[in-house]
Image 1 (cartoon, rainbow, N blue to C red):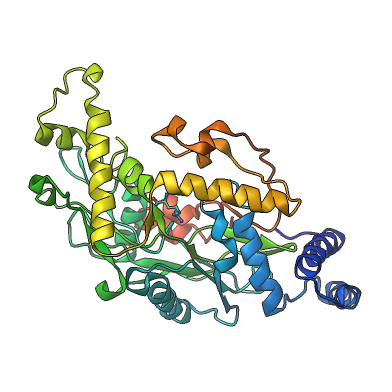
Image 2: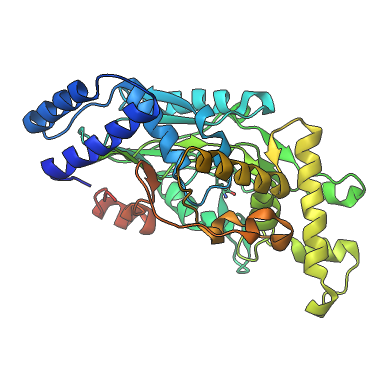
Length: 379
Ligand code: ARG
């Protein structure tokens, strides 16, 4: 994470060159000279707000697993590098949520807090700002989102108290390196929830399923020009399959297909009745309908596939070769009916980009004793 001065200068040069060329800007040599001096003196350099803004957009454009990249230029970049305390950051995150939610007309945004080369470092420990808790019940079943089991236990150990429903909002946990993590409750009015209903099946509404409107990834590191930002949460809008085919349907997530099939009166004794396929389709109809009814932005996988192919055309016309991860780009259902299924891409990871960070050890050792013993471990 801490590149040497030569390595940093090389990365800065590469990024600044791209920034100046793509924006048709003058003064590259002068800027490089300045950055070079800063790096020799301080071992790091400060990006201008304009560079930061363009760099964040490039990080989206370079996200090989994202099918929604046609819209990379429209990203709203919130330069919040001056904020560093958990309290300030949390308050600002609530503004990010408001901006992004926009009463359902979702806007893509990223908030960039302190760079990792400034001390003390700060991180959001949640995977996403808005996520539902998961509880292991005495009978071995899970209430809520099984993917949140570990993080939920961690929140309990911090002193958070849950309501105990299948859709409990987890608190936001923010940690400054070397300090105890602080948790904050998101006010309910900041979160747009979407009850899932079906245009033809009233029983579906009675299943009390819901999801949230805005996915805000909060645990990835943003890197540009050799500078890392460990706290740079960003959001887009959902693609239908993420909710209907994965979050609500995966056997290791909400696992709703068996219940749906039962209500639909399908024969689940044998996979050859294609009961899973049929239930999955109804779940997709329901999620699509529910978002549409409320006027909340959500893209279906057919449109997303077309948009991605348009992105490829635009990029190729600019002489840029699109890098993409086929296994992520192709949606998890309806594969061969989508244009993206029939294409291939190189899968080179370019900079700027977003990277996974190690899960802080505290979250892994969720009991209180271990919490005290384990200092914040930075990925
Ligand atoms: N797949 C993740 C989820 O279901 C969200 C990832 C980001 N998705 C997006 N449309 N920007 O919560």
